[in-house]
Amino acid sequence: MNPTSTPPPYAFTPERAARFDELQRKLAPLWRIIGRTDPGGEVQDDNTLVVMSSLTGEFGVPGAIQKVYEERFLFMTFLLRQPHLRLIYLTSQPVEPLTIDYYLHNLPDVTVSNARKRLHLLSPQDGSSHSLVEKILARPWFIRRIREHIPDLDRAHLVPFLTTDLERELALQLDIPMYAADPRHFALGGKSGARRIFAEEGLPHPLGAENITGEAGFVAAIIDMRARKPSISRVITKHNQGVSGEGNAVVDLRGLPDPGHPDETAAVAERLRDMQLENAGLSYDAYLRGVERQGAIVEEMIDGDDKRSPSVQMRISPLGKVEILSTHDQMLGGPSGQSYLGAVFPADPAYSRLITREAAKVGERFVREGIIGRFAIDFLTVKTASGAWEPYAIEVNLRKGGTTHPFLTLQYLTDGAYDAESGEFTTELGERRYYVASDHVESPAYRLFTPEDLLDLISVHRLTFDQTCQTGVILHIFSAVGELGRLGVTCIHGTPQRARGLYDDFIALLDREAERRGNGNAAGQ
Image 1 (tube, helix red, strand yellow):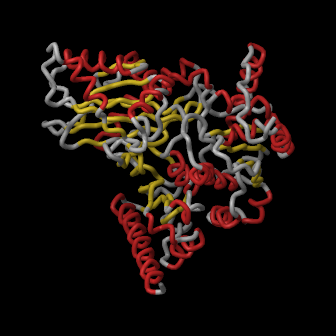
Image 2 (image 1 turned 135 degrees about the horizontal axis):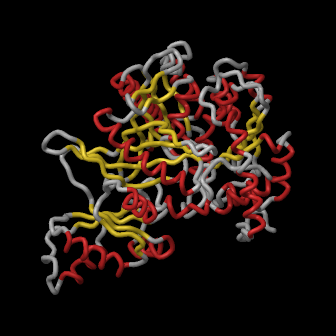
Image 3 (image 1 turned 180 degrees about the vertical axis):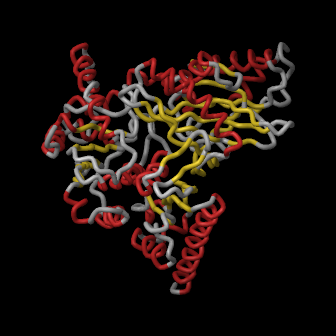
């Protein structure tokens, strides 16, 4: 097999399905170790964690962006605080030593040299556009190499970013379980599946339609929605498997003929073709091809003067227990405000309990479906004239997401926990903590920086994370800043205002330094 080719589809025979189920059953006795939220605790069991942050699917991600997203889960190295944990971290290309040094030097309670002995960075050294899991499966020798680093297959498990048939196949070839949703439940994490779950479990959600496969389906659904609610002014269409708003588009319905008018169908079709795509580089025809491949939904775009986009993060253990892990207020941007940029933690207590109560219904449903692993539910909350908040369930992300790494960074560094009832996070020392985090700290001017420059800046300006105070800045996805002009950051502090202030100060520092360097370059020309 050509090592850069996409591996062929793998037959998931009844025998392989039975073997996968057998592997998954190993997670239950392992949960005493892998389910812990206090990395500094005293568990004496040796175990191995294999981390693979592969962007598998229709992402079309360039190599540089693929690199930083594969490195986004390097916060998992903070688990090396557990003295008996061995961590295998997989990336397409080797991680720069400077990046690893940065993470390991933030480790409390363990020496860097000891942590480094238990960290194994493995790479097939393939910079092609294929997903990481495809590159691994295309190389049987590399799979053997991973297995050679696992001393006990009965005390090891795979943690992927998301799950497809390919991640499941890798777990089978490694002969270890996978702590994530089985891909047989894939449809429940799509937009159409989520709308069905919301309806069946009684969650409030926008008026709309699912399982759309083409333009005619959109037109028919919009006409039906206008008949049911003539006041609808805008709708949003979404690819079933779109991520971070990339498969979304907004259709303006204002000024159309009245519902039932003879010209309505043609007018709706024309508006549909003028949709405002969240991905500006996508044509209408290309968007429809995505609809044909994935399926899609269309739903009312909820309006309101005070509108927020919170989310709830949850997990289901192999023992069938549902946990509310965190809530966030998402920071959105892009042409129509649908692209995920970052998050504020925790979500506003004014509605955090509202959304966690609704999310719990989905969690219990997923337990009945046999799902395990982490997932998130996105909501829209709108403040009514009476001052009350109304929640609408929007999406299910049956995978890890953009809020996973900042929250676990905080949790792993502070040994704290989020309380869903109070809506607050408390460290092991009994102190409240808050953060503002973003994967999209970006500007063309930031290409002037090197990763080392960024680390020098936060050091010189005393912004590094302070283990004593448990406040400060943690960087991520910064290794390609010179190419992308982009990095990520989590700014942690003791009040919401100070966390926001730390974030704003960090951005201002980057801008000032980039301007200074840019002026210096111009002066030297």
